[in-house]
Image 1 (spheres, rainbow, N blue to C red):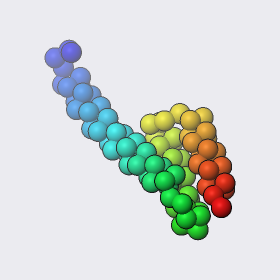
Image 2: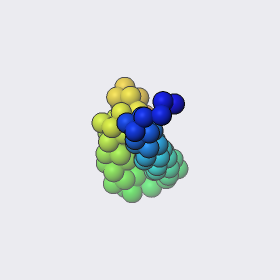
Image 3: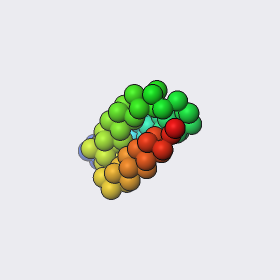
Image 4: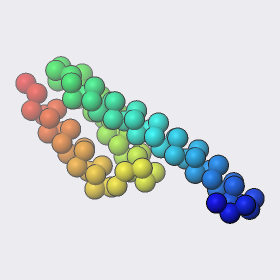
Length: 84
């Protein structure tokens, strides 16, 4: 690493961003897992919009790719709709 003020600042910023992105990503993965584990369709439909919003925010922040976000939303929606 170069010993410049700007480089040191960039390292600090990237560490902050990395921690923030890991937090949002893990929180979203946990929400998806809890949603898929649910067996109540009414409750799942309500939680679906919150989880989809979380996925969209990850894609907007470039934590995940937009196509991955679309695939996740599609798969989750199919699973929720298949609940009886």
